Image 1 (cartoon, each protein chain N blue to C red):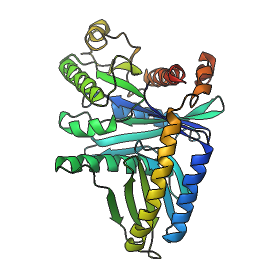
Image 2 (tube, rainbow over the protein chains, first blue to last red; image 1 turned 60 degrees about the vertical axis):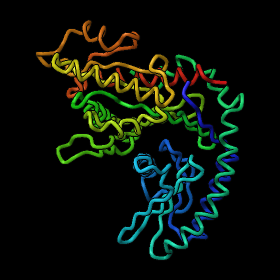
Image 3 (cartoon, rainbow over the protein chains, first blue to last red; image 1 turned 90 degrees about the vertical axis):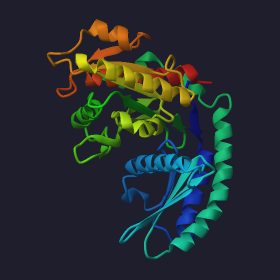
Image 4 (tube, each protein chain N blue to C red; image 1 turned 180 degrees about the vertical axis):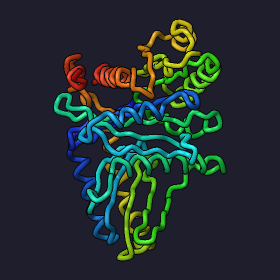
Length: 159
Length: 196
């Protein structure tokens, strides 16, 4: 089977707390934590304002393409991307080589402040993600899915 | 990589539509997008050239319903089929949970089909995934064209694994949902198989 990432309530709550704190401390509008595969793990701030599913997929694609570029010139990765808009900006960073931290901010904040706060939060996120990855590998992490029946699957596709 | 989110009671899976240039990968996704209810689908993203050739990928999120109290969410991606986008295809294939190989049925595209399948095998291997075991469905598209090759011939050339295979005409939708249902089932069965 392909690998599985399991996100439990505990880690979800801790990641959400980091997002909420980063929104406050960086004076940001929205913070997202996305896995490199393009799945949104958690968010903070006014997250419903943006189509987060699309955003997560595009950011992951962009990060993957940037990684490809980095390797072309002999770097492992470019860990930070910055997009400057007229009203709003995106600060995108790779954390612990595993998840992507996205900060959307406007003129109430600044690139310097965001960079500073992201650095601090990234250390904490790495610790949480390490725990999350360990727990994903533990026996029982996906046990309840052993009971999926063919009928359960068929019921997803009513004729 | 399947993501199981206990906090939000969701399972996320990634399905990639692979195949040679102009075989109909994007047309498959467009038909699914057009025919599914807004409650089930998210926004479809196409990163395409001005001539509507896929430049990086197409993306369509679908939410299919609940299993064991978990909402099943499928993220459908296409790769750019043109040969020179090899690097992009490799990126999109990362952490894939299921593959739909879309073959172009036209006789003169058999070599392109074969090349694309070889490219898929190579890229999966680099991701430490095995084409022998990953959930995969083969679709023989463009069956409406007069120069479509016999199915048996395509099958012996492109499907030595005897994976589920479907005839399709993606422009009219024929075979599109059968293909999607089958790959979704295979991915979910794979989650069951790997449960620990």
